[in-house]
Length: 335
Ligand SMILES: Nc1ncnc2c1ncn2[C@@H]1O[C@H](COP(=O)(O)OP(=O)(O)O)[C@@H](O)[C@H]1O
Ligand SMILES: [Mg+2]
Image 1 (cartoon, helix red, strand yellow):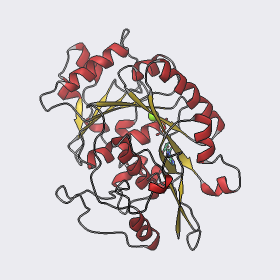
Image 2 (tube, rainbow, N blue to C red):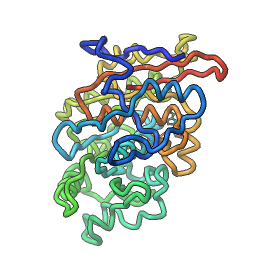
Image 3 (spheres, helix red, strand yellow):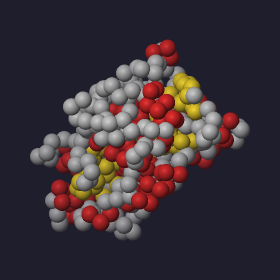
C-alpha cells in the first residue's frame, strides 16, 4: 500500500489528488502523438501501484521565457549535482524539450561520464572562445535523445585560461540562443562545489537555480549559504532537491525529515530522491537512471522533479511511502 503525504506548504492541499493532471510520469520514451508510453511494462506489484498513482495524462506546459537558464548547485561536493543535471536534463529531453547541459565543473568534469559521452567530446568551450572551433563542434549530441546536447567548459584536469569567467559563460549562453537550430528550451549548468571563482562563473548567466542537498547538517549549512549568495547575485527563483533520502533512518530519527529540511531552508521543493544503489550502477555504466527499464524509484523521482521544473507554478510535492511488506523498503517521490 502506498500512502501520500503533502510535503510543501501548498496553499490548497486538497487540490492534490492521485488522478490530478499535475501528476505525470514517463518511465519510458513517450509516443510523441499520444504522449503515452507505447506499452505498459510495470510487472511487479510495487510499480503497478505506483503507475496507478502517477498518471501519464499530459505533457507539462513550459512556464517562463526560453531559454530557461538553470544552475544546479549545492556548495558541498558529492551531494548529487551532476547526477541531477544528467537525469533531469534527459527527462526534459524525453518530455520533448530541447536541452543543453553545460559542465561548468572545470578540471573535475564528469557529466560526460555519467551520460556515457566521454569519447565524443573533441572540443570544449575554451576552444570555442579561442576561435579554434565552432560552437556546434563543441556541442555533443546525445545519441539516444537528439534534443539533448552537452557542452564541456574545458578538458579534464586542465586549468581555465586566465580571464575565463562569468562573462565568457554569458557569451556562450547568448551564442546558444542565436543558433540556427533555434534557442534551446533549457540550459542546465552543472556547478562545481564550493563558493569560489568556479561557482561565481557558473551562476553568472543563470536566472534560476536548483539547490541539491542531502539530509545532513553539513550539506544543509552549505545549501543555506549558497542560497544567500544566489539571492545576492539576483537569482530569486531557487528550488531544492533533497537527495539520498532514507525513510528507515528518518523513522528511527537518525535522519532529518524532508519537512524539517524545508523548514530550515525555506525553499520550494522540486524533488525528493531516495538513496538508490541503481544511481551508482547507472553512473558507472554511463547510462542515466531515468533511461532504465524498468524504471527505478530514484529515476521516477528525477522525472517528477523535471516535470515540476517545467511547470513552475505546480510546486506541490508528494511523498509516496510504500508499506514494508515483502520487499521491506520505502520509496519517496516528488509528484
Ligand atoms: N540518490 C542517490 N543514491 C545513491 N547514490 C547517489 C545518489 N545520488 C548521487 N549518488 C552518488 O553520489 C556520488 C556523487 O554524486 P555526484 O552527482 O557526482 O555529486 P556532485 O556532482 O554534487 O559532486 C556519485 O557516486 C553518485 O553515484
Ligand atoms: Mg559534480
